[in-house]
Each structure stands twice: as structure tokens, then as C-alpha cells.
Length: 163
Length: 316
Image (cartoon, rainbow over all chains, first blue to last red; front, side, top):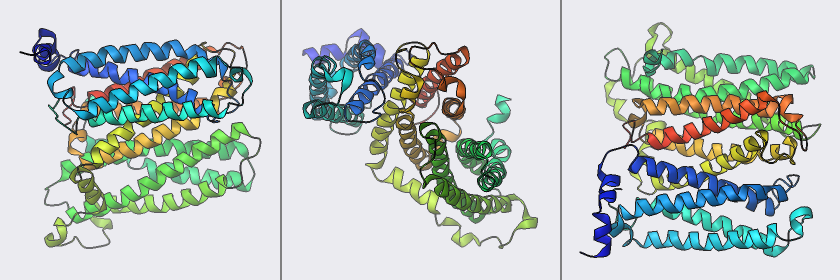
């Protein structure tokens, strides 16, 4: 029995898939959705603000939302891992899953660069933002959009187990 | 009360006069407000347009429940139901567009002293058109059960099988394999936009970024409304695509109820002077804090109900 099958047959995975408890699959997925809403919600406001939307909204104070963004990210990393092990053999054979992971990896890189260069740069207080900052904002928006799309399509394309 | 409201036919009969009577009243107020240049009346009318458009969501979805209850009864003509449903979908679409632009006009009222020239004539045109379409839909709805006002004879059984516009759209949503997943993906993007604004505006009111004035975060509201708009469109696609999985679903009933509350909540932040006076560094007043906390609860509950449709309810 290989590692993936072992993970999928673990007591935890079986509980997630088959217990019927609202705390199992429905609850974990609910947390994953709340996490997405908070994470991508904050990202969207930061990115759109960099791109020139809501110009009278001061940019620098948005930094206070960054810890919340990362809490949401780690909640989703945790809940995402739980959902993955419960369906490991199917998800890890689905190319769409790797599209999602690639989108998230690039989005995280963009987020780190936005935090270092844009929040840490002189424009954070006064603006306007240089073209490079706007490129990062577009990259971040496109990657998160791709992650949402690929995530949703996991239920439809490639091998699908119904989870 | 809940038991009473769980009968969609009953709810539909309770709600079906709101879009016509409420909208007619608002239209009259709006015209008088414009003619007499009375801003208070005009703003009240815009707010009623928005509220009626919001209630119309519940009216529309309860109509499908009523249809399911009446289906197959010998005294109910399927053709009459279909004509009403198609007219209602058309009127509903225009009503939601009117509601959106009415809200936008209220939002712009805050931003600038004078409104851009195009918005008020647009709302006026849309509202007159919507009122005519809604009156037609209501009249066709009345003909389903009130034989005394029936203008056309009940159609023959032969043409009863042809689907109307609403049912054809439903077949498109449920029949084309890409439509449902595409709508779901957009529904998720929409909820992120809505949540972004809810978080930032409401956490400001609760004291998180006090250095930012309410007027500054107020600029974000159309982004949230855009997210809501995307979700209303895609949500209606789901509903029309498969009404049966929603109309007998208590979780869906709660979801629509929370959406209604959310409409009143956003109206408070759009119109009331109290949050508007919260400047740089100011602590928000208690009412604004309660409204902000309610907004976060309401939209979290909308997401909860939507997510739980298959698990607590019977969808999918």
C-alpha cells in the first residue's frame, strides 16, 4: 500500500469522508470558504487600491489587515491539507490540483513582494505607485482568480471522486 | 410563523404586492421629489426602490415554490403560470437593475454635492419601465387564480408543454455542462469582493483602522455591491437552473432572509449621517458599531447558509 492510499485510508480521512458529521467534510470546507473570503477579500482591496481604485483611501493603514490575511492563509493551508488527505489518490492525480497549487505559490510570492516593496516602500504613505507595484498587483489578482477557478473546477475536471 | 412562512405559496401571496404597490409608491415620490426639487423625497424614493428590489428577490423565488404547489391542479392553467413566470423574470431583471442604480445614486449623493447628470434620468427611465413590466407580471399572476379578471381564455393542453423563457434559461443552465461550474467560480469571486468590503468597512467601525475616516472606506462600497451583483446574477442562474432543490430547502429560506437583512444594513451605511460623521481618528458611535457587527454576522450567515444548502438542506 503506497503512501497516498495509506493517507486516504487513515482513521482521520475516513472520518472526514464518511462520518456524516457536520464538523467533518462540511465544516472543514466551510472553514476553507471563510478563509478564502477573508484572504482574497483583503488581497483584492490591497491590489485594487495599488491599481488606483478608491484613491482617497489611505494605503498604509491597510497594513493592519495583513496579519488577518496570513491567519486566513494558514487556516486554508490546514483545512486544504485535511481535504487533500481525505481524497489523496484522486486529487493528486488531477492536473487541475497542481494548477491550483502553482497559482497559490505565485500568488504568495506576489504577496510577499507587495508587502516588502509596496508596503515597505516610500509610496505607501504618499503614492502614486510605480509600474512595478501595479504589475505585482495584477499578478496577485490573476493568480488568486486562477486559484479560485482551479479550486472550484476540482469538483468537475480530471478524476473526480465526488468529494 | 416559520411554519407559515415555509409554505412558498403563502409567502408569494404575502410578498407579491410589494413589487407593484411599493414600487408605484416610490415612483410617485420620486417624480414629486424631482419636480419640486425636494432632495429628501428623492432620496427616500431611491431608498424604497432599493428595498423593493431587495424584497423582490424573495418574491421571485417564492413564486417557484407557489408554482410547485399549484402544479397539476385542474383549475390552474400551466400556460397562465408560464406567462406569469416569464413576465416576472423580465420585470425582476429590470427591477434589480433599477435597484442597483438607485443605490448608486444614493452612494454618489455622499461623494459629491451634485449627482452626475446621467444617473437620475437613468433611474427615472428604468423605474417607469420596471413599473410597467411589473404591473404586467402582476396582472398575469392574478389571472392564474382569479378567473373573473382573465383576459385570455386558458390555453389548450397542447401548447402547455412548450417551455417559456424562464424554463428555457433553466434548461440552458442545467443542460450545458460548463454553465454551472462557471457560475460557481464567479459566485466565489463575488463573495470575496463582498467580504473584502464588509471586513474593511465594518472593522473600521469596530475600531481597527481608526486613522482612516468613514468617508474614505465609503469609497469601497460599490466594490461590495459589484460582488453582490455578480452573486445575485449567478445565484439566480442556479435557482432558475434547478428551482426544486431550493424551494423546499429551509436553509435557502434563511439565506434569502439574511440577504434581505443585508440590504437594510447597507442602506444604513449608505444613507445615515451617523457613520458618515466618523472622521480620522474618531471612535464610531454605538449604533454604527452594532450595525457593523450585524453586517459581519449577516454576511457570514449568508455564506454559511449557501455552503450548507447540500448538507443541512437537500440541494444536490
